[in-house]
Amino acid sequence: MHDRLLKDQVVVVGCGLAGLSAACVLAARGHRVVVLEKNDWLGGKAAVLEQDGFRFDMGPTILTLPSVLHRVFQEAGKRLEDYLHLVPLDPQWRCFFEDGGLLDLHADIATMQETLKTFTGDSQVAEGYGRFMAMSRRLHDVSERFFFWKSVGGIGDTLDTTGMFSAAVLKDVLSLRMGSSVASVVRSHLADPRTAQMVDHFTQYVGSSPSASPAVLCGIAHMQTQEGIWYPLGGTRAIPDALIKLAQELGVEFRMSCDVAQIRTAGNSVVGVELTSGEAIQAQAVVSNCDAVRTHRELLREHPAPSRLSRKRDIEPACSGVVLYLGLKERYEHLLHHNFVFSQSPDEEFEWIYQRGLPAPDPTCYVCAPAVSEPAVAPDGGEALYVLVHTPYLRPNHDWSQLLPEYREVILDKLERTAGLNGLRQRIVSEHSLTPADIHSRYRVLNGAIYGVASHGKYLGAFKSANRSPELKGLYLAGGAAHPGPGMPMVLMSGWIAADALDQDCQAV
Ligand SMILES: Cc1cc2nc3c(=O)[nH]c(=O)nc-3n(C[C@H](O)[C@H](O)[C@H](O)COP(=O)(O)OP(=O)(O)OC[C@H]3O[C@@H](n4cnc5c(N)ncnc54)[C@H](O)[C@@H]3O)c2cc1C
Image (cartoon, rainbow, N blue to C red):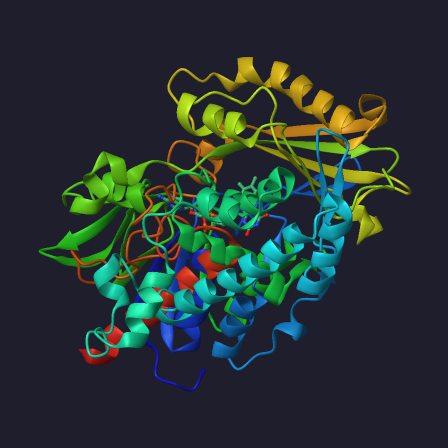
């Protein structure tokens, strides 16, 4: 890679996982890359908190689709295994229900069907699960062919016009069940309410309501069972660390505490960036890993936002969240690495979060107990417990300095009542928290949204901003609010797509 002639300079604005992925791919293909990050750490939301002998991942904890990471390393002719040690987790989640029911999600479909037979006492639920997973697989296959690994901003970009009218393509399009929601499709396969609640919770990976999200997102279930859930030893933080190491080997320059104030343009072309310090940096192209909507609103003020980004209904932020980081002096042995402690009524819960815009009084809590896989995250016998509760995106009337103390008690009560974490308050010896307001300012996202733009809309909800700007030559978008969407594997893919599009455009010149 290094012996190739270095091409003109590319600036990457923001150093989240998408920015890192883009930087690695571009450098591997011979571009000179400078990454500018406003924070004094690299990796964005994949940050770490070390406190009182505990180590907490601050943001993402569930890693799926490791094939995307492999592909980024393969670009540079490297093996992921030489940079990162991934451990498989199966059962993937443990689910706790308000009625005392406990259900483990297994990757293997036959094992899961047996588990469901025992859990529900109804063999039809097991059959329905089998049918649902077959459909999920088909949706994922269609996404792989039409949606992934290329810059897509709308339905037109997904279609290869030469094959558009073939019967096979028509069958694929019909299988997407456009006009149906995740919740309706899940319930048409799974009559058991607790099993349906578990399965449609996959839409929480993209911070969206199952009843408003398009059925194509049912494909997430297959992605997780097919490739598994993995834990990187050293925690999620090991992922950006591995990418930073690769990027440095490829000659990428990183500059921290560099706040980009604007992307500079001449006519309809990008020519560089300007920092808040006034420093100007020239570039042949810019990859923005800053939120896609905010990139247009704040960094490109002289250019009107493209139509899709200016329509209010197209830019509904995804949900936000509260995270409690609880250093416990003693572990709970009945927790798995990943656990979901479900609300009694998902309809009510999602109505609070996605319609009323207020924290749900009976929330679902995601609980990560990493000491199961890596005891070193806590002092001897302890646990670095991580509790994430989804909340509405940030509204002007939300004052989280006022809301948090009361909501903390709601969350701790829920964990004691539904997950049997008895005596939880007495076990806490160290504590920290993250609110929607913190997420908003730390990562400069849209209204504190964890997962970019909501995937709401039964026809077009899965579409985000294209990675190659249709308006400005030399501008590329990577990150959770750009195609193909949020979550670690998707943003890593979005970085790859942005870099690939940029590289192709350079070769075309
Ligand atoms: C609490 C939480 C839990 C999550 N759980 C999971 C999970 O379990 N599994 C999963 O797959 N995903 C999860 N996610 C989502 C996942 O973390 C994100 O989708 C992904 O990390 C986003 O990466 P990104 O590169 O798009 O953005 P970011 O990580 O937000 O990076 C963008 C970077 O750009 C910088 N920036 C912005 N504007 C500027 C500017 N003007 N100048 C310079 N720098 C700028 C920001 O400081 C930031 O570092 C979670 C997220 C959170 C917050």
